[in-house]
Amino acid sequence: TLFNALTSVLSIVIAFVALFVIDHKIALVMLLILPLLILAVIIYQKVSTKVYQAMLAKRSELNTKLNEYISGMRIIQQFRQESRLGNEFEKTNDEYYGYRKKVIQINGILLSPLVNFLMAISIVVVLLMYSNRSLHAVVEAGLIYAFISNVQIYFNPISGLMDSLSNFSNGLVASSRIKTIMEEQEFSPKQGSESSVNKAPLIEQGKIEFRNVSFSYDGEHQVLKSISFIVNPGETLAFVGHTGSGKSSIINVFMRFYEFTEGQVLIDDQDIRTFTKEELRHKIGLVLQDSFMFVASVTDNIKMMNSQITDEAVKEAARFVQADHFIKDLENGYETKVIEGGAAFSAGERQLINFARTIVRNPKILLLDEATANIDTETEALIQDGLTNMRQNRTTMAIAHRLSTIKDADQILVLNKGEIIERGNHDELLELNGYYADMYRIQTLQKEL
Image (cartoon, rainbow, N blue to C red):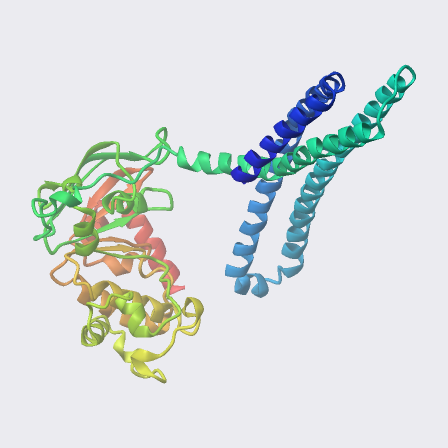
């Protein structure tokens, strides 16, 4: 594109020099066309930039809807939302079509057609000037032909340059959107340097400590306020509280997904920032509420494509978390192919595979983010047995909505609006007869009903 632009500019200069050599007076008149071209470029840039911005924004919305509808197809069909969402998509598509049509209309008016119009006016002006001159002197026909030919040669590259303005405007708007992302000031939290990996500390015991930790996602509203607790090696700490109380935020801070603003987080009495990211990911196992499964074999889903993990280690991990009971009954056992999203498995079976995926790496610290929230009753007993095995000799922090699953926790923290309002074990909190006791009685009553 740059080469074509340079070629066009050179062609314009050469054509104008030729016009000047043939007849410098009329050639100077041709220069009056340049302000009109410059004005057209300015108008085009102002108008087209706004339309291109709106068009690209609408295209982004269109792609987002497509991704959302495809990934949520089962829910859409289950609740018979095809017609409503189809109408929404059609509306967005029509709006995108409208902006695309405006772009074509603007290009059709202000680009090549405008240059051709100006070229026609220039030829008319040249003929009028030569006809006026012919009234007083003899004008050679070859001279007129040569001048008009060079006028066409002069305008053709200009037409090419104007056409490239469309791509230029599109690229300019797209680059501004990229620039917005590139100028984002939020970075991943800094960890120990990879170059000093031999000097960086290792997680050996698994002791966890939070000292007056405060955290905010937006820098204004704190979701964690002076959180302090200690989890000794091998102990289990559970977090309970209503939605938005800050439970998952503690996990996000500890996993170094976000940087905390105040306080200290320690592992084995070492600041968490001094550990390398590789050490944290290797020694900390995270089990989420939703377990994603790839289109691959059950073995590959547990290995996560890590060739260093043997098939025997996979089977041992599956047996350890009670997943072996249903995997070995599959048509091809551990080599059974998983369809998209693991739709052929129940929620409990997917979670057991998720447990095996975590435990096969033998983490020192275990984080359970509502790992039992979506399980079915058929595999609930297996889930509980798997969790019990996983927590053995590991420091565990667990978020739980089902209070019955964390009754044996060494310590339970009750959170409300980012603050710890109660702490103790299950029996101590029941004796306290406070927030936790009310939650437990409500859940017990619901279970009985």
